[in-house]
Amino acid sequence: METFKSKITSKKNDISGSVSAKCPSNIALIKYGGKREIQIPMNPSLSFTLNESNTQTELKFKPKNTGEFSLKVFLDKEPKEDFVPKIITFFKRIEEFLPFLNQFEFEIHTHNTFPHSSGIASSASGMGALALCLTELETRLGGDLSSDEKLKKASFLARLGSGSACRSLYPGITVWGETDAVKGSSDCYAVPYPYEVHENFRNFQDTILLIDEGQKEVSSTVGHRLMENHPYAEKRFKSAEENLKRLIPILKEGSLEEFGTIVEHEALSLHAMMMTSNPYFILMKPNTLCVIEKLWEFRKSTALPLFFTLDAGANVHLLYPKKNKQKINDFVENDLKKYCFEAKMIKDFAF
Ligand code: DP6
Image (cartoon, rainbow, N blue to C red; front, side):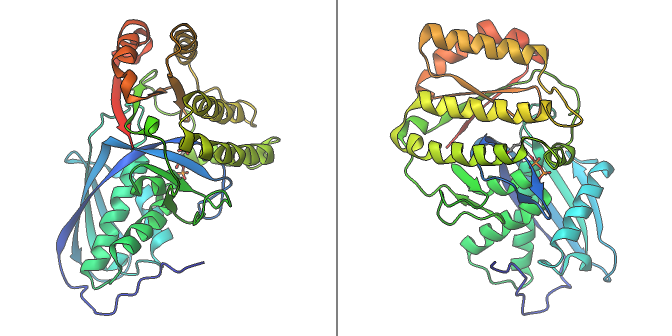
C-alpha cells in the first residue's frame, strides 16, 4: 500500500494562521454498509457528488507545546462541544500521517449550506472539508505534494473520519473500495469514476424529501457494526459489487430504467439488512413508504424516469434527469410534499 506519511522537510511549526476549504456532500447509489478496522469497507460503493450541498470550513491554528490535541469547534459561530470527541478520534487516527497535529491549537469554524436535519449527511462534507484544510496546512508547513496527491491524501484522511466522506473529494461520480471492476480503485481512498458516462446522467437531479426530523435512531457506527454477525452479510457484500459491475455499462449506455432498478435495489437492500440484523431496526417511516408507492404509481402512469434512493434513515432522495425537472417538480409539489416534515425539501443536482 502506498504511504501517506508526511514528508515535511522544513520546520515551520511556529506559524499561526488559517486555511479554508469547501467540500460537497454525496449520495451513494451503490451503498457502503459494513466495515473492518480501520475504516476499510466490506464492499465497494459508488456515489454522485452533490453540487450545492456543501460544508465550508476554516481551520485556525496557532503553535503550542506538544502534548494533547487542542481544538474547539464552532458551527455557524456557535461552540459545538459535542463535535469535539469525533474529531479527536479522527485526529488520533490520522496523527501518524500528519505528525504536527499536536503542535497546534486549533479552532474549526464550519458552516453547512444545507439546513440542519435536512436529510443530507453533514459528516461526509464536514470530514471532507476538514481533511482538505489539513492537507492545505501540511503544504503551508512545508509539505510538497502535487495537487493530485493532495486530493488523494485528503480522500484517504477523510475516510478515517467518516467512510462515505472520502467519496466527496471529487466531483461527479466516485468509487471507494477495491474492486476489479474499477481500475485504480482502493479501500483506502476514493477515485473519480474512470469510465464513460452517458449524457442522460449529466446534471442528474436529487430532490431530498425530509420525512422525519428526528435524530437518527441508529448511528452510522452502530449501523456498520450490525453487519458483523449478520446472517446475510457475505451475500450482501457480493451483491453490492455485482450491482456496481452491472451499473458500469448502464452508465455508459444511458439506460435510465436499468439504472433505476439497480439504484432502488441498493436502497432497499441497505434497509433490508437493517431489518434483518440483530438487533433489528426499521428506519423507514410510514410516509417513506407512501412516497415510494406514489413514485412507483407515477412512474407507471407517466413512464417518466423518476427513481428513489435512501440513506440510513427515513428521508427519500428522488433521482431524475434534468430534462424532466419541470414535470417532476409539479408531481412533487402536488403529490409528495404532503408527506414531508413541515413540507421541507432540498433540491440539488449531481455531476
Ligand atoms: C448509509 O460514512 O456515515 O450513507 O464510516 O462510520 O462514518 P462511518 O459511516 P458513514 O456511512 C454512510 C453509509 C450510508 C451509505 C453510503 O453513503 O454509502
